[in-house]
Length: 383
Ligand code: GLA
Image 1: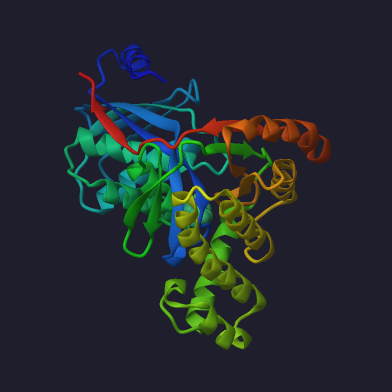
Image 2: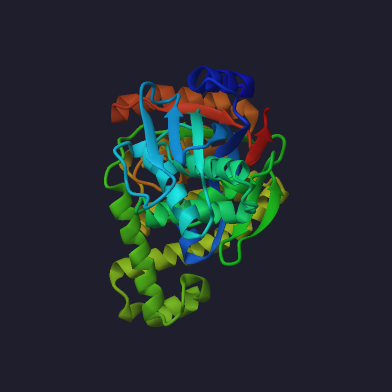
C-alpha cells in the first residue's frame, strides 16, 4: 500500500497524524531449510510483499493497535506491568514484541499502531516475521531505542520462542530486517554474518502456494528441532554445526532412526547452500536444478516435512520444465509454498502445468506469484 494511503487511514482512525511508517518484508528461502536453528547456512531473499505499520506515541501508556487486514478488530493493552496473551491472535504478535523489548530493559510508553500487510498468510512466506520486524522497527523509532537491525531480528525471534511458543531459528526475521534489493543473503546462523548474493537478472522467482491447510505445524516443527538437538547431544557436539557426515556415520548406531535422518538432512543441506551460492554466481541452471531437487528430496525423505500437495507441485513443475528450471518446497513445511527458479520464458509453462494438473489431482487451487528480491526493514518519518 502507498505510504500516503496508510497514513491517511491512520489520521481517519486516530484523529491526528502518524509520525512514521515501518515496512518489513516477507521472505522466500532459496535453499537451506531447517539449518538455521542448527547454526548452519541459509539463503533466503526478502520479497516485494510486506507488512507496514503507521505509528505514533501517546501519553497514557496504552498501546492501541488496528489492522486493515482484520477490519473491526483492535487490541489494546498497557505498556506498563506484565504483558500477557490477549484474545486476538494477530494482536499477540505485537504483545510478544513488547514483552521482549521490556524483558531486555527497554522503556516503552503508549503507542498507536495501524498495520496493513500483503504478505500471503499460511504460505510459508513469513508473514509473522514481517509483522514482528515491522513492529519492532516502529517501536524502536517511536521511542528512540537505538536498536540495530540485527537485534531487531533477534527480538523478533525471541518473541516467537518465548511468547508465541514456536522454537524457530533466526532466518525469517534476519532476512526481513536486512534483505537487499535484487539479492539473496547467505546467512551464517552461527555468527549471523551475511553475504549478499546477486540474483541473476534473467532468473525469475516463481512462488506457488499449495494452499494446503496446514495442521500441527508448530508441534511438528518443535519436534524436528528436538530430534536435531538429540542427534547433536549423542554425537557429543554443542550443535549440528560442529558435526560432519563422517562423525554422523561413526555414531549412527547410537542415534534413533529419526535423529539420524534429521541430522543427515541438516549436514547435507548446509553444503547445498554453499554450492547454491556458487551456482547463482555462475548462473548455472543445471546445478541449481540438481541442488534444489536434492534439497526437496531430503526434506521429503529425511526431514519428513513435505505433504503430498507440495510433493505434487514439485513433480508437476519439474516435469513441465524438463530440466529448464529448479524447484523445491520452501519454508517451514507441512504445506505452504514451493519456489521455482526459471527463465522468464518458462513462467507460462509453469502456470499452464499447475493450472492443468494441480487442482485435478489435489482438489486445491494454487496461487502463483512472480516475485522480485526486495529490500529489508525501512522506517520512514512521515510528519
Ligand atoms: C520456519 C522458521 C525458520 C526456519 C524455517 C525452515 O520458517 O521460522 O526459522 O527454521 O521454518 O527452514
